[in-house]
Image (cartoon, rainbow, N blue to C red; front, side, top):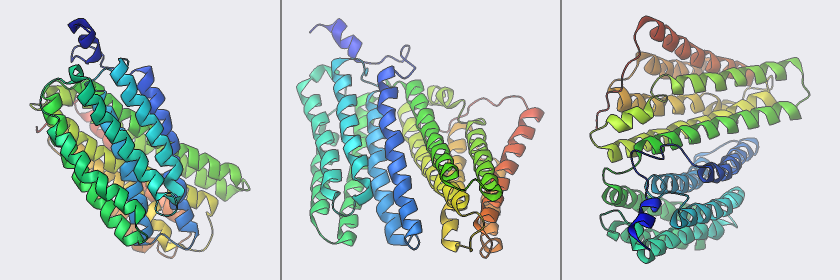
Length: 391
C-alpha cells in the first residue's frame, strides 16, 4: 500500500475531531457492561451488605472493563477507526468487552477464566496487529506494550485459575498495575504530541454520559418495578434531580471545555492521560450513585440500612473526588463548592445513619443541588473562564 493509504489510517489533529459512528457503536457494549456492574453491586447489597471483599472484587472487574474502553479510545485517537486496522481494533474490542461483561456476575467465581481470557486475547490481537501492520505505527517503540502484555498476561490467567478469591484479587491487581504504566509509556511514545486530543476529550465526555444513562436506566427500572406509591415517586424524583445535577456539575465548566484544555496543554498526551484518570473516578461515582438511587427508590421508607450509605452518599462523594482534580487539570484551581460538598456528604453520614433510605437520598440530592446553584451564581457573576491546563 502507498503513503496515501497510510494517511487514511491515521487521525490528524486538524481533522476527525468527532467520534465516528463505529466508535458510538462500540460504546453500546459499555451500556451493557456498566449495567452488569450495577447489578452485581445491587446483588451484594441485597444479599446482606456490601463488604470490603465484594466491593474490591467488583472494582477489579470494573477496572478491567474501563481499561478495555480507555485503551480502545486512546488507540482510535491516533489510528482512524474507519481504516481496516482501526476496524479490527474496534470490533475485536467490542467482542472482548461483551464477553467480559457477560462474565461480570460470576467474574470472581465460575467465569473468571472467561473474563481474563477475553482481555488477554484482545491485548494479544492488538500487539499482533501492530507487529504485522507496521504502517499503523506513527513513531516510538512497541517495546513498552510488549513488556506490559508479557508481564500482565501471566497474572491475569494465573489469577483466573487459582481457587482462592483473595489470591485471585492479588494477581489481578498485579496485572492491572503492570498494564497501566505500560500503556501510559507506550501510548506516550507511540502517539507523541500527535494524539487527536479533541477527539479523546469527546470520547471521555461520551463515556461520562453513558454512565449517566446507566443511572437513568436503573432508576427507571426500580420505579417501574415498584408499587408506584407516593414515596416511590418521591424517590424517583430525587434520583432524577440528582442525575441532572451530576450532569450540570460535570459540564460546568470543565467538562464542556475539556477539548480546548487538551488542545491548549503543553503536553496533550499527558493531559489526556490525567483527564482519563479523573474520569475513571467520576464514572465510578456515577455508577455507584445509580445503585444508591435504585436502593432508595426500591425501599424508600424501609428500616435504616447504614450499609446502603456506601452507595447513596458514597457515590456522589466519589464523583466529587474525581471532579475536583479534573477542574484542577483544566483550570489550575479547584472550586470551594466541591470541597464543601464533600464535607457536607461526610457530615450527613452520622445524621442519616438511623434514618430511612429516602432521607439519605434527599440529603445527597440537596448537596448536589447546592453545588449546582453555586456554579450557576458563579456563571452569572463572571465572564466564562478560559482553560489554563497545568500540563
